[in-house]
Length: 471
Image 1 (spheres, rainbow, N blue to C red):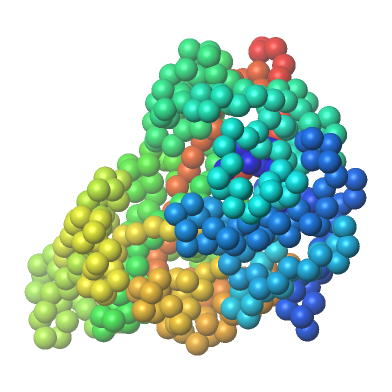
Image 2 (image 1 turned 120 degrees about the vertical axis):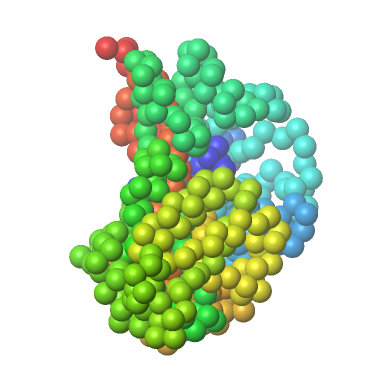
Protein backbone atom coordinates (compact mmCIF):
# COMPACT_ATOMS: atom_id res chain seq x y z
CA UNK A 1 0.00 0.00 0.00
CA UNK A 2 2.74 2.48 0.94
CA UNK A 3 4.99 1.34 -1.91
CA UNK A 4 2.16 2.03 -4.36
CA UNK A 5 2.22 5.69 -3.35
CA UNK A 6 5.86 6.00 -4.38
CA UNK A 7 5.54 4.10 -7.65
CA UNK A 8 2.04 5.14 -8.77
CA UNK A 9 -0.10 8.27 -8.76
CA UNK A 10 -3.84 8.63 -8.34
CA UNK A 11 -6.02 11.24 -9.99
CA UNK A 12 -5.74 13.09 -6.68
CA UNK A 13 -3.54 12.75 -3.60
CA UNK A 14 -4.14 13.53 0.06
CA UNK A 15 -2.21 16.26 1.81
CA UNK A 16 -1.25 16.26 5.50
CA UNK A 17 -4.81 17.25 6.48
CA UNK A 18 -6.49 14.42 4.55
CA UNK A 19 -7.68 16.87 1.86
CA UNK A 20 -7.55 16.09 -1.87
CA UNK A 21 -4.94 17.88 -3.98
CA UNK A 22 -4.19 17.59 -7.72
CA UNK A 23 -2.07 14.64 -8.91
CA UNK A 24 -2.61 13.08 -12.36
CA UNK A 25 -5.73 15.23 -12.55
CA UNK A 26 -4.78 18.91 -12.57
CA UNK A 27 -8.40 20.00 -12.01
CA UNK A 28 -11.93 18.63 -11.76
CA UNK A 29 -15.55 19.73 -11.74
CA UNK A 30 -18.87 18.19 -10.79
CA UNK A 31 -21.78 18.08 -13.25
CA UNK A 32 -24.90 17.73 -11.15
CA UNK A 33 -27.19 17.08 -14.12
CA UNK A 34 -25.11 14.06 -15.14
CA UNK A 35 -24.08 12.97 -11.63
CA UNK A 36 -20.47 12.84 -12.79
CA UNK A 37 -16.99 14.15 -12.21
CA UNK A 38 -15.05 15.61 -15.15
CA UNK A 39 -11.28 15.36 -14.73
CA UNK A 40 -8.75 17.39 -16.70
CA UNK A 41 -5.58 15.32 -16.79
CA UNK A 42 -1.98 16.46 -16.92
CA UNK A 43 -0.31 16.43 -20.31
CA UNK A 44 3.12 14.99 -21.09
CA UNK A 45 3.09 12.65 -18.08
CA UNK A 46 5.22 9.59 -18.81
CA UNK A 47 5.06 6.06 -17.50
CA UNK A 48 8.31 4.65 -16.18
CA UNK A 49 8.90 3.00 -19.59
CA UNK A 50 8.52 6.43 -21.29
CA UNK A 51 5.11 5.70 -22.81
CA UNK A 52 2.63 8.61 -22.52
CA UNK A 53 -0.10 8.52 -19.88
CA UNK A 54 -3.65 9.15 -21.12
CA UNK A 55 -7.31 9.01 -20.10
CA UNK A 56 -7.52 5.46 -21.47
CA UNK A 57 -5.24 4.32 -18.64
CA UNK A 58 -7.71 5.75 -16.12
CA UNK A 59 -10.61 3.98 -17.83
CA UNK A 60 -8.66 0.69 -17.88
CA UNK A 61 -7.76 0.99 -14.18
CA UNK A 62 -11.37 1.56 -13.13
CA UNK A 63 -12.62 -1.42 -15.13
CA UNK A 64 -9.80 -3.59 -13.74
CA UNK A 65 -10.68 -2.66 -10.15
CA UNK A 66 -14.39 -3.22 -10.77
CA UNK A 67 -13.66 -6.66 -12.25
CA UNK A 68 -12.22 -7.80 -8.90
CA UNK A 69 -15.29 -6.92 -6.80
CA UNK A 70 -16.60 -9.97 -4.95
CA UNK A 71 -13.77 -12.23 -6.09
CA UNK A 72 -11.05 -13.96 -4.11
CA UNK A 73 -8.45 -11.53 -5.47
CA UNK A 74 -10.55 -8.43 -4.75
CA UNK A 75 -8.41 -5.31 -4.78
CA UNK A 76 -8.06 -3.22 -1.64
CA UNK A 77 -9.12 -0.29 -3.84
CA UNK A 78 -12.36 -1.87 -5.14
CA UNK A 79 -14.50 0.11 -2.68
CA UNK A 80 -13.37 3.31 -4.46
CA UNK A 81 -14.95 2.26 -7.77
CA UNK A 82 -18.02 0.35 -6.55
CA UNK A 83 -20.40 3.24 -7.24
CA UNK A 84 -18.98 4.19 -10.64
CA UNK A 85 -21.61 3.40 -13.31
CA UNK A 86 -19.97 4.79 -16.45
CA UNK A 87 -16.57 5.97 -17.62
CA UNK A 88 -16.29 8.07 -20.78
CA UNK A 89 -12.98 9.09 -22.35
CA UNK A 90 -13.61 12.57 -23.79
CA UNK A 91 -10.11 12.96 -25.20
CA UNK A 92 -6.55 11.95 -24.27
CA UNK A 93 -6.54 14.33 -21.30
CA UNK A 94 -10.15 14.52 -20.21
CA UNK A 95 -12.40 11.86 -18.71
CA UNK A 96 -15.94 11.75 -17.30
CA UNK A 97 -16.75 9.41 -14.40
CA UNK A 98 -20.41 8.90 -13.55
CA UNK A 99 -21.63 7.77 -10.10
CA UNK A 100 -24.81 6.08 -8.99
CA UNK A 101 -27.28 7.90 -6.75
CA UNK A 102 -26.09 6.21 -3.53
CA UNK A 103 -22.48 7.26 -3.90
CA UNK A 104 -20.60 9.63 -1.66
CA UNK A 105 -19.34 12.33 -4.03
CA UNK A 106 -16.09 12.66 -2.09
CA UNK A 107 -13.22 13.53 -4.41
CA UNK A 108 -10.91 11.67 -2.00
CA UNK A 109 -12.22 8.41 -3.53
CA UNK A 110 -9.95 9.01 -6.53
CA UNK A 111 -6.66 8.43 -4.73
CA UNK A 112 -6.44 4.84 -6.05
CA UNK A 113 -3.30 4.14 -8.16
CA UNK A 114 -3.63 4.40 -11.94
CA UNK A 115 -1.99 1.52 -13.85
CA UNK A 116 -0.84 1.45 -17.51
CA UNK A 117 -3.17 -0.21 -20.01
CA UNK A 118 -0.29 -1.05 -22.34
CA UNK A 119 1.35 -3.37 -19.77
CA UNK A 120 -1.55 -5.84 -19.98
CA UNK A 121 -3.24 -7.63 -22.86
CA UNK A 122 -6.49 -8.06 -20.92
CA UNK A 123 -8.03 -6.93 -17.64
CA UNK A 124 -7.69 -10.50 -16.31
CA UNK A 125 -3.93 -10.25 -16.76
CA UNK A 126 -3.78 -7.52 -14.11
CA UNK A 127 -4.39 -10.22 -11.49
CA UNK A 128 -2.74 -13.17 -13.24
CA UNK A 129 0.48 -11.85 -14.75
CA UNK A 130 3.53 -12.98 -12.79
CA UNK A 131 7.19 -11.97 -12.89
CA UNK A 132 6.17 -8.47 -13.89
CA UNK A 133 7.92 -5.31 -12.76
CA UNK A 134 5.16 -2.76 -12.01
CA UNK A 135 5.21 0.45 -14.04
CA UNK A 136 3.78 3.67 -12.67
CA UNK A 137 4.02 7.43 -13.10
CA UNK A 138 5.27 8.09 -9.55
CA UNK A 139 8.39 9.81 -8.28
CA UNK A 140 10.21 6.48 -7.92
CA UNK A 141 10.40 3.55 -10.30
CA UNK A 142 11.26 -0.07 -9.60
CA UNK A 143 14.82 -0.91 -10.59
CA UNK A 144 14.83 -4.51 -9.37
CA UNK A 145 12.40 -6.80 -7.60
CA UNK A 146 13.29 -9.95 -5.68
CA UNK A 147 10.00 -11.49 -4.54
CA UNK A 148 9.69 -11.80 -0.75
CA UNK A 149 13.11 -10.24 -0.17
CA UNK A 150 13.84 -6.82 -1.60
CA UNK A 151 12.52 -4.08 -3.89
CA UNK A 152 14.93 -1.44 -5.15
CA UNK A 153 13.53 1.93 -6.18
CA UNK A 154 15.39 4.60 -8.12
CA UNK A 155 14.42 8.19 -8.84
CA UNK A 156 12.11 8.76 -11.81
CA UNK A 157 13.99 11.45 -13.73
CA UNK A 158 10.91 12.08 -15.91
CA UNK A 159 8.59 12.68 -12.95
CA UNK A 160 5.97 15.35 -13.63
CA UNK A 161 6.02 16.77 -10.08
CA UNK A 162 8.62 17.82 -7.56
CA UNK A 163 11.46 15.30 -7.61
CA UNK A 164 12.74 13.87 -4.32
CA UNK A 165 16.34 14.45 -3.23
CA UNK A 166 16.99 10.84 -2.20
CA UNK A 167 18.11 9.02 -5.38
CA UNK A 168 17.30 5.44 -4.38
CA UNK A 169 15.42 3.44 -1.75
CA UNK A 170 15.92 -0.22 -0.93
CA UNK A 171 12.79 -1.73 0.57
CA UNK A 172 13.62 -4.82 2.59
CA UNK A 173 10.82 -7.33 3.16
CA UNK A 174 11.17 -8.33 6.83
CA UNK A 175 9.04 -11.11 8.40
CA UNK A 176 7.77 -9.05 11.35
CA UNK A 177 7.99 -5.70 13.09
CA UNK A 178 10.30 -6.84 15.89
CA UNK A 179 12.82 -8.17 13.37
CA UNK A 180 12.70 -4.90 11.43
CA UNK A 181 13.29 -2.81 14.54
CA UNK A 182 16.20 -5.05 15.60
CA UNK A 183 17.82 -4.51 12.19
CA UNK A 184 17.19 -0.77 12.51
CA UNK A 185 18.98 -0.68 15.88
CA UNK A 186 21.85 -2.65 14.34
CA UNK A 187 22.20 0.07 11.69
CA UNK A 188 21.21 -2.34 8.91
CA UNK A 189 18.07 -0.35 8.03
CA UNK A 190 17.45 3.39 7.70
CA UNK A 191 13.86 3.25 8.95
CA UNK A 192 11.02 1.03 10.09
CA UNK A 193 7.39 1.37 11.06
CA UNK A 194 6.45 0.70 14.69
CA UNK A 195 3.04 -0.13 16.10
CA UNK A 196 4.16 -1.89 19.28
CA UNK A 197 3.52 0.58 22.08
CA UNK A 198 6.96 0.45 23.69
CA UNK A 199 8.70 2.23 20.83
CA UNK A 200 9.87 4.95 23.25
CA UNK A 201 12.78 2.66 24.13
CA UNK A 202 14.27 3.48 20.73
CA UNK A 203 14.36 7.14 21.74
CA UNK A 204 17.42 6.36 23.85
CA UNK A 205 19.34 5.45 20.70
CA UNK A 206 21.06 8.70 19.71
CA UNK A 207 21.22 7.66 16.07
CA UNK A 208 17.42 7.28 15.74
CA UNK A 209 14.46 9.65 15.77
CA UNK A 210 10.81 8.71 16.41
CA UNK A 211 8.16 10.37 14.23
CA UNK A 212 4.78 9.69 15.86
CA UNK A 213 1.52 10.06 13.94
CA UNK A 214 -2.22 9.56 14.42
CA UNK A 215 -3.55 6.41 12.77
CA UNK A 216 -7.05 5.90 11.36
CA UNK A 217 -7.80 3.41 14.17
CA UNK A 218 -10.53 4.94 16.34
CA UNK A 219 -11.80 3.50 19.65
CA UNK A 220 -15.17 4.30 21.23
CA UNK A 221 -17.92 3.25 23.61
CA UNK A 222 -21.24 2.53 21.87
CA UNK A 223 -24.50 2.91 23.80
CA UNK A 224 -27.32 0.53 22.89
CA UNK A 225 -30.35 2.68 22.04
CA UNK A 226 -32.59 -0.39 22.21
CA UNK A 227 -32.10 -0.24 25.98
CA UNK A 228 -34.60 2.29 27.46
CA UNK A 229 -32.10 3.39 30.12
CA UNK A 230 -29.47 4.36 27.52
CA UNK A 231 -31.98 6.25 25.40
CA UNK A 232 -31.78 8.89 28.15
CA UNK A 233 -29.22 11.49 27.12
CA UNK A 234 -28.58 12.41 30.75
CA UNK A 235 -27.39 8.85 31.44
CA UNK A 236 -25.02 8.90 28.45
CA UNK A 237 -23.57 12.25 29.51
CA UNK A 238 -23.21 11.11 33.11
CA UNK A 239 -21.25 8.05 31.93
CA UNK A 240 -19.03 10.28 29.79
CA UNK A 241 -18.21 12.51 32.76
CA UNK A 242 -17.41 9.45 34.85
CA UNK A 243 -14.51 8.27 32.66
CA UNK A 244 -10.91 9.52 32.66
CA UNK A 245 -9.74 8.88 29.10
CA UNK A 246 -6.31 10.36 29.81
CA UNK A 247 -5.65 7.60 32.34
CA UNK A 248 -6.58 4.93 29.78
CA UNK A 249 -4.22 6.46 27.21
CA UNK A 250 -1.35 6.58 29.70
CA UNK A 251 -1.85 3.16 31.25
CA UNK A 252 -2.94 1.11 28.24
CA UNK A 253 -1.25 2.90 25.34
CA UNK A 254 1.75 4.35 27.19
CA UNK A 255 0.62 7.79 26.04
CA UNK A 256 0.50 6.79 22.36
CA UNK A 257 -3.09 7.69 21.52
CA UNK A 258 -4.81 10.98 20.73
CA UNK A 259 -7.94 11.98 22.61
CA UNK A 260 -10.90 13.24 20.61
CA UNK A 261 -14.57 13.97 21.32
CA UNK A 262 -15.68 13.16 17.76
CA UNK A 263 -15.01 10.36 15.25
CA UNK A 264 -12.88 12.62 13.05
CA UNK A 265 -9.08 12.60 13.10
CA UNK A 266 -7.58 15.72 14.72
CA UNK A 267 -5.32 15.86 11.63
CA UNK A 268 -8.28 16.21 9.29
CA UNK A 269 -9.28 19.45 7.60
CA UNK A 270 -12.85 18.59 8.66
CA UNK A 271 -12.02 18.46 12.38
CA UNK A 272 -13.07 21.33 14.64
CA UNK A 273 -12.15 21.46 18.32
CA UNK A 274 -15.26 22.25 20.31
CA UNK A 275 -15.31 24.32 23.48
CA UNK A 276 -17.35 21.63 25.23
CA UNK A 277 -15.18 18.67 26.18
CA UNK A 278 -16.04 15.59 28.17
CA UNK A 279 -13.52 14.99 30.93
CA UNK A 280 -13.78 13.13 34.20
CA UNK A 281 -15.90 15.21 36.57
CA UNK A 282 -17.76 13.17 39.20
CA UNK A 283 -19.85 16.16 40.32
CA UNK A 284 -21.19 16.67 36.80
CA UNK A 285 -21.69 12.90 36.43
CA UNK A 286 -23.83 12.79 39.58
CA UNK A 287 -25.78 15.86 38.44
CA UNK A 288 -26.72 14.14 35.17
CA UNK A 289 -27.51 10.85 36.94
CA UNK A 290 -29.79 12.82 39.27
CA UNK A 291 -31.56 14.44 36.30
CA UNK A 292 -32.21 10.92 35.01
CA UNK A 293 -33.65 9.85 38.37
CA UNK A 294 -30.67 8.02 39.86
CA UNK A 295 -29.04 8.93 43.18
CA UNK A 296 -27.54 7.29 46.25
CA UNK A 297 -30.55 6.62 48.46
CA UNK A 298 -29.15 4.19 51.02
CA UNK A 299 -25.57 5.41 51.59
CA UNK A 300 -23.99 2.40 49.87
CA UNK A 301 -21.57 2.96 46.92
CA UNK A 302 -24.30 2.53 44.27
CA UNK A 303 -26.90 4.79 42.69
CA UNK A 304 -30.55 3.73 42.87
CA UNK A 305 -33.78 4.80 41.23
CA UNK A 306 -37.03 5.51 43.09
CA UNK A 307 -37.86 1.80 43.13
CA UNK A 308 -34.55 1.08 44.84
CA UNK A 309 -32.97 -0.70 41.86
CA UNK A 310 -29.20 -0.32 41.67
CA UNK A 311 -27.73 1.11 38.47
CA UNK A 312 -26.02 -1.85 36.76
CA UNK A 313 -24.72 -1.97 33.18
CA UNK A 314 -22.95 -4.57 31.05
CA UNK A 315 -19.75 -3.57 29.17
CA UNK A 316 -19.02 -5.88 26.21
CA UNK A 317 -15.44 -6.34 24.98
CA UNK A 318 -13.58 -8.90 22.85
CA UNK A 319 -11.16 -10.93 24.96
CA UNK A 320 -8.61 -11.41 22.14
CA UNK A 321 -7.81 -7.69 22.29
CA UNK A 322 -5.84 -7.29 25.56
CA UNK A 323 -5.64 -3.50 25.25
CA UNK A 324 -9.42 -3.24 25.05
CA UNK A 325 -9.88 -5.60 27.98
CA UNK A 326 -7.50 -3.50 30.08
CA UNK A 327 -9.28 -0.31 28.98
CA UNK A 328 -12.65 -1.86 29.87
CA UNK A 329 -11.43 -2.71 33.37
CA UNK A 330 -10.23 0.88 33.89
CA UNK A 331 -13.56 2.24 32.61
CA UNK A 332 -15.43 -0.08 34.98
CA UNK A 333 -13.34 1.15 37.93
CA UNK A 334 -14.02 4.79 36.99
CA UNK A 335 -17.77 4.28 36.69
CA UNK A 336 -17.96 2.33 39.92
CA UNK A 337 -16.45 5.40 41.62
CA UNK A 338 -19.39 7.30 40.15
CA UNK A 339 -21.85 4.79 41.65
CA UNK A 340 -22.49 2.51 38.66
CA UNK A 341 -22.07 -1.26 38.82
CA UNK A 342 -20.27 -2.30 35.63
CA UNK A 343 -20.08 -5.95 34.58
CA UNK A 344 -17.20 -6.37 32.10
CA UNK A 345 -18.19 -9.13 29.69
CA UNK A 346 -15.02 -10.25 27.84
CA UNK A 347 -16.00 -12.81 25.18
CA UNK A 348 -14.50 -14.40 22.07
CA UNK A 349 -14.46 -12.32 18.89
CA UNK A 350 -17.08 -14.59 17.33
CA UNK A 351 -19.40 -14.18 20.33
CA UNK A 352 -18.59 -10.45 20.48
CA UNK A 353 -19.75 -9.95 16.90
CA UNK A 354 -22.89 -12.02 17.49
CA UNK A 355 -23.84 -9.91 20.51
CA UNK A 356 -23.06 -6.61 18.78
CA UNK A 357 -25.17 -7.34 15.71
CA UNK A 358 -27.82 -9.07 17.81
CA UNK A 359 -28.14 -5.99 20.05
CA UNK A 360 -27.29 -8.04 23.16
CA UNK A 361 -25.26 -5.48 25.11
CA UNK A 362 -25.64 -2.30 27.13
CA UNK A 363 -22.33 -0.64 26.27
CA UNK A 364 -19.71 -1.97 23.86
CA UNK A 365 -16.02 -1.06 23.65
CA UNK A 366 -15.19 -1.24 19.96
CA UNK A 367 -13.23 0.42 17.17
CA UNK A 368 -13.32 1.40 13.50
CA UNK A 369 -10.57 1.86 10.96
CA UNK A 370 -11.56 4.80 8.79
CA UNK A 371 -10.88 4.93 5.06
CA UNK A 372 -9.80 7.91 2.96
CA UNK A 373 -13.40 8.32 1.79
CA UNK A 374 -14.74 9.93 4.91
CA UNK A 375 -18.43 9.20 5.45
CA UNK A 376 -20.05 8.65 8.85
CA UNK A 377 -23.41 7.43 7.54
CA UNK A 378 -22.47 3.81 8.28
CA UNK A 379 -22.27 4.60 12.03
CA UNK A 380 -24.85 7.35 12.54
CA UNK A 381 -27.52 7.24 9.83
CA UNK A 382 -30.80 5.53 10.75
CA UNK A 383 -30.83 3.61 7.44
CA UNK A 384 -27.95 1.51 8.79
CA UNK A 385 -29.60 0.57 12.10
CA UNK A 386 -29.91 -3.10 11.19
CA UNK A 387 -26.29 -3.20 10.09
CA UNK A 388 -23.24 -1.05 10.90
CA UNK A 389 -25.23 1.38 13.07
CA UNK A 390 -25.52 -1.48 15.56
CA UNK A 391 -26.32 0.84 18.48
CA UNK A 392 -29.65 1.64 16.71
CA UNK A 393 -29.14 5.41 16.95
CA UNK A 394 -31.69 7.56 15.16
CA UNK A 395 -31.87 11.33 14.79
CA UNK A 396 -33.58 13.01 11.85
CA UNK A 397 -31.33 16.07 11.99
CA UNK A 398 -28.22 13.87 11.96
CA UNK A 399 -29.58 11.89 8.98
CA UNK A 400 -30.12 15.14 7.07
CA UNK A 401 -26.65 16.49 7.84
CA UNK A 402 -24.95 13.21 6.88
CA UNK A 403 -26.74 13.13 3.53
CA UNK A 404 -25.84 16.77 2.86
CA UNK A 405 -22.20 16.01 3.69
CA UNK A 406 -22.08 13.04 1.30
CA UNK A 407 -23.45 15.20 -1.53
CA UNK A 408 -21.38 18.33 -0.81
CA UNK A 409 -18.92 19.28 -3.53
CA UNK A 410 -17.44 22.60 -2.39
CA UNK A 411 -14.85 22.06 0.39
CA UNK A 412 -16.05 25.02 2.45
CA UNK A 413 -19.63 23.77 2.38
CA UNK A 414 -18.52 20.26 3.34
CA UNK A 415 -16.48 21.63 6.23
CA UNK A 416 -19.43 23.72 7.40
CA UNK A 417 -21.72 20.67 7.43
CA UNK A 418 -19.17 18.57 9.33
CA UNK A 419 -18.92 21.28 11.96
CA UNK A 420 -22.67 20.92 12.48
CA UNK A 421 -22.33 17.12 12.62
CA UNK A 422 -19.62 17.40 15.28
CA UNK A 423 -21.69 19.82 17.33
CA UNK A 424 -24.71 17.51 17.22
CA UNK A 425 -22.57 14.43 17.95
CA UNK A 426 -21.14 16.00 21.10
CA UNK A 427 -24.59 17.12 22.26
CA UNK A 428 -26.41 13.86 21.45
CA UNK A 429 -23.53 11.53 22.43
CA UNK A 430 -24.57 8.35 20.57
CA UNK A 431 -21.03 7.09 21.09
CA UNK A 432 -18.42 8.26 23.55
CA UNK A 433 -15.26 8.93 21.56
CA UNK A 434 -12.20 7.63 23.36
CA UNK A 435 -9.13 8.17 21.17
CA UNK A 436 -7.33 7.52 17.90
CA UNK A 437 -4.40 5.13 18.33
CA UNK A 438 -0.96 6.41 17.31
CA UNK A 439 1.76 4.77 15.26
CA UNK A 440 5.39 5.68 14.66
CA UNK A 441 7.92 5.82 11.87
CA UNK A 442 11.44 5.45 13.30
CA UNK A 443 14.19 6.82 11.07
CA UNK A 444 17.90 7.35 11.37
CA UNK A 445 18.65 10.93 12.46
CA UNK A 446 20.63 11.64 9.30
CA UNK A 447 17.33 11.62 7.36
CA UNK A 448 16.18 15.24 7.49
CA UNK A 449 13.38 17.32 6.00
CA UNK A 450 9.62 17.65 6.54
CA UNK A 451 9.00 14.21 7.99
CA UNK A 452 5.27 14.15 8.67
CA UNK A 453 4.03 10.55 8.32
CA UNK A 454 0.31 9.92 7.99
CA UNK A 455 -1.54 6.64 8.36
CA UNK A 456 -2.48 6.74 4.67
CA UNK A 457 1.04 7.71 3.57
CA UNK A 458 3.96 7.10 5.94
CA UNK A 459 6.27 8.65 3.30
CA UNK A 460 4.27 11.89 3.29
CA UNK A 461 6.48 14.85 2.18
CA UNK A 462 9.23 12.44 1.03
CA UNK A 463 10.13 14.87 -1.75
CA UNK A 464 11.64 17.13 0.95
CA UNK A 465 13.63 14.38 2.71
CA UNK A 466 17.38 14.35 2.37
CA UNK A 467 20.31 12.59 3.99
CA UNK A 468 22.94 14.65 5.79
CA UNK A 469 25.82 13.67 8.11
CA UNK A 470 24.73 13.11 11.71
CA UNK A 471 25.69 15.76 14.27
